[in-house]
Figure 1 (cartoon, each protein chain N blue to C red):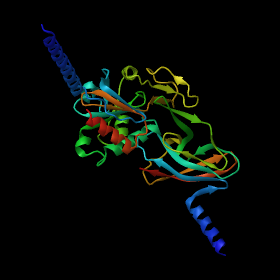
Figure 2: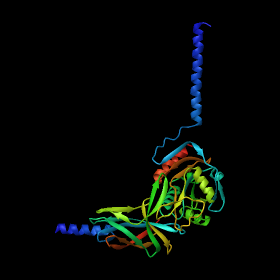
Figure 3: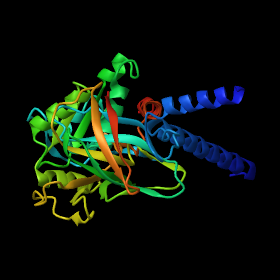
Figure 4: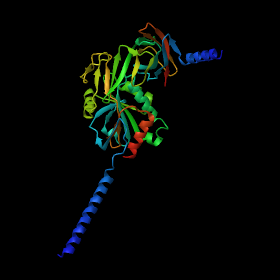
Length: 225
Length: 141
């Protein structure tokens, strides 16, 4: 092969390789859009979204609540307990403000659910949970479950909870049995979970959950997924 | 003369702004968030002003509408929310301490009656300087 023809062939091959690379990157980016650029304190965005561990809880109507109940709509989830006088009612009141019209447009509000997961199954019966969460918004759903199921879910999400005596703050390690102490307090995860309509964890947000901040984050997460 | 009127008006204004004041301590904006009827415990938030030249401590709290009242603090560590009982609260000289959601609160336990937005709850606060005062906390939505 003459020297010039060989150089032309080489250039052609190089051009094809470069074009393929560009096409490859383009296809990759189209399939995996970059994570939304929301850089806010307390916000962690998972890109790609993380699959939630398999869980098996019960809702405040006494019906089973497993991963399939998260499909088809966005879910915002918080953890707590109904004997919590300060933090939990504040969070629920803030969520009620978020879900109240016109903060979220009717279409968006209908496409999202809020669930409050009680990690105090010994005191929070389904009846107690039902009265508690629906007071804030009739569409809110309370969840709880068998102590071992709650423990497994929190362990797999790496957000442990525990009981403690309010006087000393001494942690009670055993969450599988009701503490002997009557007025125990519950140490629990304070963040909000954003779960997409495929039931995947998109982001977590630590407080505060004031309306402007939470609404902006939710809208941005939703627009990017 | 003008000054006397000014001072009188100012004093009246101060009295109007500070509804609960006994001696060196004043309580501002005492409120209780309305809670679900089944809630076993409620929180009361307020601001304590110490106008004296020495630290005072809030030592105990009682209310006829509740079996017990405790001073509690919520704290966040590594994303975890913890709640602890405090024996007393220090209010430094010439300063104020705000009890607010996510921080300090009065934990109202064993309620004797249903409370709705607009109701008022009489609460007695006792301080280390032997001051004791009754305040009215408003239940708010």
